[in-house]
Amino acid sequence: MSDEVRKISSGAPWEERFGYSRAVELPNGLVLVAGCTSTVNGRIDEGGPYEQAVTAFGVAVEALESLGLGREDVVRTRMYITHARDVDDVGRAHKELFDDVRPAATMLIVSGFVDPSLVVEVEVEAYRRTAAES
Image 1: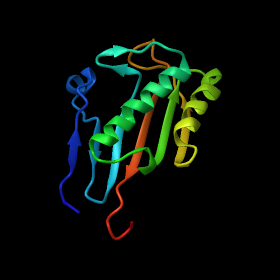
Image 2 (image 1 turned 45 degrees about the horizontal axis):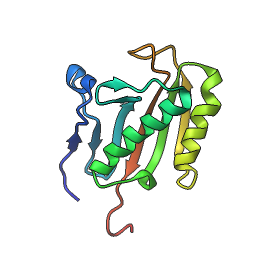
Image 3 (image 1 turned 90 degrees about the horizontal axis):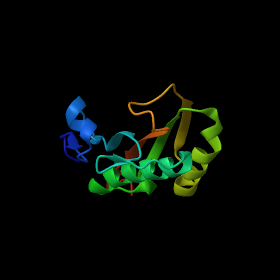
Image 4 (image 1 turned 135 degrees about the horizontal axis):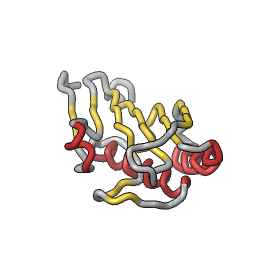
């Protein structure tokens, strides 16, 4: 395994504006994916909580795929929502994607996001197994 920290960008407008990477892979195999929303190609997909969660998780999984990982490598998720009424919709989106993976998961209610039309933001952490662990 390399001793280098790998960083990738998705080209999202806030990455450059605020100076962060979409995902960072540490030498120990841990991959951290920054908060993902339903913003794709600079535009917000303004569906409801379920649709926004599906899109946000899609952005996160795409970041993992760019590093050669997939949803099956996810070990932790965090879901941030703006209203308690959205728990079931966001939870359903999570279950559809990760039911067979069963990562550790947290869902938090927050006061809002950088754009008021966003109602969901997600983070994922994944782990790259070494050949000896496979």
